[in-house]
Image 1 (cartoon, rainbow, N blue to C red):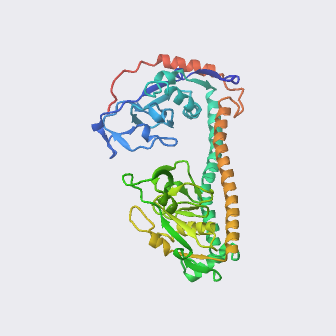
Image 2 (image 1 turned 45 degrees about the vertical axis):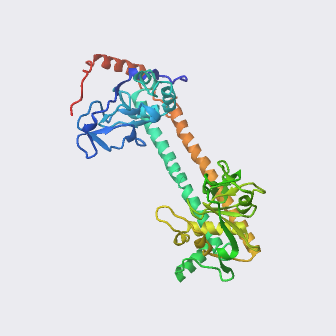
Image 3 (image 1 turned 60 degrees about the horizontal axis):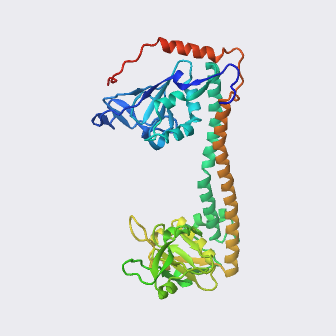
Length: 443
């Protein structure tokens, strides 16, 4: 612990609080109908306070609304919540602060200790935070009035960071909307002529599902390229040499993930039939039908399985333009009528070949791709900046709490009595209390 401000004291939590270690009531006494006493286990811990889902008619260990609850067993050990009037299971302990130790002050301080407590629990046989660990925890203590000033300041500052975090969390949905707007504008010819607003007004006036620019040519996918489904994989029948192949999981929107490429036997003829070369577009047949990427990785020994379509476009059609078109067509829901299946959707080759595809001349296709990628690059930069800001916001909360418990967040009042007086009073009051009798709580 760093040097404390004048008037503060440092002591262990065991001298400031009592501990109630949870115990599960009989399973036969539990219910989800609201009968009896609310029952809290680690699974009911919320962001700040428990979410009551279960009740018991035979509570054993009880917590109160003035306690601080902590998970003491398993993967969630160290997680804390404000207290509730409830029974607690064996995965939960209730920390009951003495008079003069503010509940919110203790709750906020314990936030700074979660990582350390969790780490220490890993050294035990079952990953348990024991009563002794809690009791030995060092706590910096100011006067009760300063505790309340600290709590008020922490709440004020973290409320602001919470609002900022909420706004930054919206970034992912905004990014998706911006991308969709760019693609919508692109395939209405708007990146070369109309504004998106003009395009939307035209759509609204015509009632069309989509609107093809008058100077563009309308085709079907089957007319502009060769579609080839991949190889059906059968370990019992496959022959030839082990060959790496792509599955639909390896195809992301606009990119390939080759970190998890599997091997299967392909004959020399099959390797030729199911080869992948620059400019090939691989399109998911299942999983997320329509998801596509253009191979630009140079010569490769990779093949692909039946879960993917390979599209090789004829001369005059840009693969990236086609891939972006397919993304727009898929993400706007236009692909849905072409899919088969109920729970699991598929894009059959015949249906894929009939999908409408419209495009301008080759030079315009290339220019539209350039403008899409320029817009996407700006969106990606904004998303990256928002992500960094979100990370900084999380760190800001940590710094706020660190300053709070070093006595640097609020000014001290020289009229406050030293916390050592508070500590003496707490010790005297606790010493005067009768020893609690062991026994089962009444229902």
